[in-house]
Image (cartoon, rainbow, N blue to C red; front, top):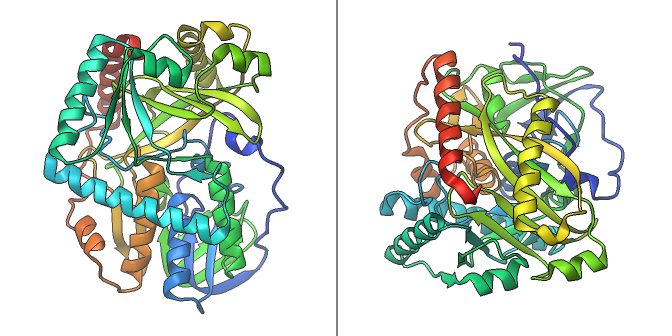
Length: 440
C-alpha cells in the first residue's frame, strides 16, 4: 500500500527555531528488522516508544519520523497539556459529568507520564512545568462562560480560583480582560524542548529514531522509506490525521488547521512597559476565542497569539492563508497590548489538528499487528501522550483500567460528503468566531 500523501506543515516551527540547531538526523539507508516499529515521532509516537521501553527493555524499537523532531505538529501547538474538560464544540468546554470525569482521569494519566519522563530524562522546567492556566474573559459573555464552567468544575469537585480584572491585569499586563478562571492542573510546555528531550532520552535507552524518513508505503508490517525499509513484528501508527493516508478511518476524520504568531523577543524596556507576570498562559473563555502565552526563556521574552480554525480535508493550507490569518492575529495582539505597538511578529505558522464528529479517537488494532494511536480531538499533547501509552499496552497484550476505558468508546462515525462537510464546518466555525466577539 502506498501512502496517499505526506505531511505538509505551513510556516516555520517557531518553538524549534528558538533552540540551538539539533544534531544531524540519523538516516535510514538499510533494510532492517525490529520487534517494534512506530511511525511518527510526536507526542503519541514517542510516548508509545517510552512505554515499550518500560515493558520490553530488551526489544528492538524503531521510530520513523517524516521530518525533523519537533518540526511537525508536535512542535506547533501552544504548549498547553490540559487536564480538565476542554471540548472545543462546547460553549464552556464542559460536557456531561461522567464523561468529563473520565476525560480528566485520562488527561492526568498523560500529564503524570510526561512529568516522570521529564524527571527521568532531565528535561528542563522550561520544557515541562505543571503551573496551571487561566481561562481569560474579555466580555460579559465570556465571563458568563467562565461562571458556567466554574459551576461545572464545582460539580466535579475540582479546584479553581476566579480572578477579577485587577488580578488579570497583574497577571497579563493588559487591561483587556474582565475576569479569569484559574485552574492548577495544566502543564505548560515549550513543546520543542519537551519533544526533543524525550527523543534524546529514548535514544539513550536504545530506541532507534530515524528522521527525514517518511513512510511512502506500508505492506503488512514492512514500511518503505525513500532509502530503506523496516520490517517489524508489530507496528504503531502515531500519525494523527494522516492515519487516513495509510488507508484507515477514511471519511471519518476532520482535518482542521489552527494558526499562531509569535513576536520577536521583547526588549527590557518593552517588558517593563508590559508588566505582568514573567510567564503565563491564557486560553479564551469562549472556545473559539484567542489563546495567548507569555514565555521568557530560551529565545527571550515573547508573546504568542493563537486563533482561527479552518477545516481543510486536503490536509494542506497555503502560506497565503497563514499570512491572511496573521492579520487577525495582529488585530488581537494590538487590542490586548497597545503598549507594544512597535512589536512585530517574527514567526507565523499553522498546525494540523484531527477531530472526529463524535469526539473519539481513531484507536485500536486496525489490521493484524498494526495499531492506531490517532485523532486527538484538539488535545494533542495530552491525548497523544495517552493514546501512545495505551497503544503500546494493547499491542503488548497488557490490560489496564484506562485501556479498557478508552476501548469502550465508539469508533469515529462517518462524515458527510467532503464538499458538504467543508462548507458546513467552515460556516459553523466562522459563525462561532463571529459570536465570540471580543474573546477573538
